Length: 152
Image 1 (cartoon, rainbow, N blue to C red):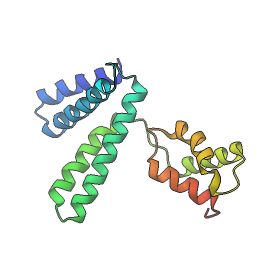
Image 2 (image 1 turned 45 degrees about the horizontal axis):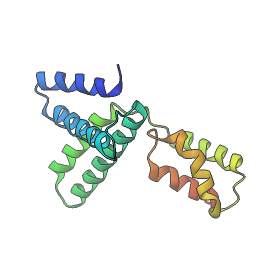
Image 3 (image 1 turned 45 degrees about the vertical axis):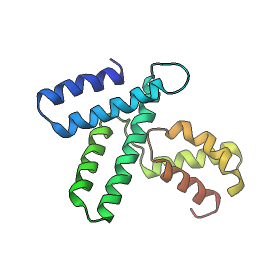
């Protein structure tokens, strides 16, 4: 069973158990997946890798919204966004630890023969496919930048 089918099955289960946060979150995610499928010139079905990209994007939105609500003093909304993020995280691959990302970055720097910040693009091209959906993009680029500028 693919990821989309799993989401649809879990939505049915969440509706049956009257779990409003889970059912609402899965509905939003399925809508985002459908929007991605119909965007562009032709309708297509996303593969699991593309769905993970959509899920990662939605999880990032939830993290950013939770932070914004917390900063604005709306802890109830921040908690809802955090809970939605936890529901989405169940469908994402296990996240890499910071040490694992550092190792991938170090290997990519060696592979690219990178010597300074001007080589960040080369390194990111190697790192990105290995960390997509498994690590926050901000963390990855920060670690690459720190490594290339000698901050590590």
